[in-house]
Image 1 (cartoon, rainbow, N blue to C red):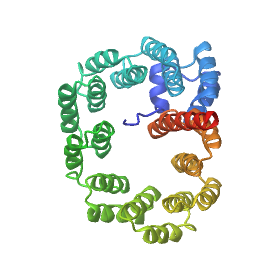
Image 2: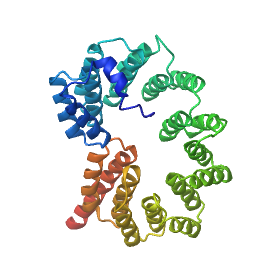
Image 3: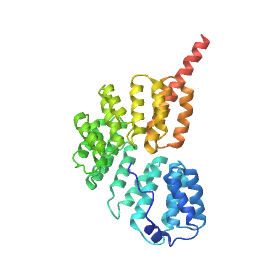
Length: 358
């Protein structure tokens, strides 16, 4: 899913909510906490801002996002509706943004018809690629694949975006419909890369299309421009080809490079896991966590869980998974792993019980 802007510029805030007042510190603290993914603090600060009447439209919007991230969907919907009704001046872009978040809340809450209706309303004034994608996603989840394809195709035609194409592909791939999703990867590789992020994204598209040589070229270019994510993906290409030594050499060469250490340690942990060396994997993860931030930290913590599962320490894995899902509730890979782990544990306990009876 495309990341929407969490923060609007101060000028927009003043247009929507009036001039800054003495209670603005609550709003600012709420926004800072939201950026840091501290949703408990963010909700407390933004609820205070709402009670103080500070920038109501924006405060309600940000409060809705915090509730959404906390999976409190009913409260999120209410906050987004309050944001729209609190606008002092009409602003079409702001309205579309809030409606998009409301639709996303509906999708996550399972109200797919509600999401479709809101996305359709967004389209009334202006064609919006993100809303087309989200409506297509809702249709897809309803297994209305024909209508989903119509919206996905329209979204791709409306806006050239690697991320949009990759998001659509991932929906198909996760539903065991990779062949149907490949056409969106093929659309992605036709876009001319201009930025470091572009080279990383087109590298991902080539990787999923199994065009390894092109993927290596794109990741190498992004890596030289400072992308640690591209370095990780390049190593993953090597690992997928069974070139573990080449992957280890790559990751090791970046251990002392500023901004790359956490990702490099995560890569080395993956190499160790590929060799069933969980002790080394956990050691690399521990070292990486010392400097990790944002997505690097999330990746390391997830692979820490995988390491404990691989060594059959399911109690530790279960405890770490609970903490991980609380911190990263939107991590679908972790959700799938948690479901899989629950099935494995259930089978293990049943076998243990049978052994005890025998």
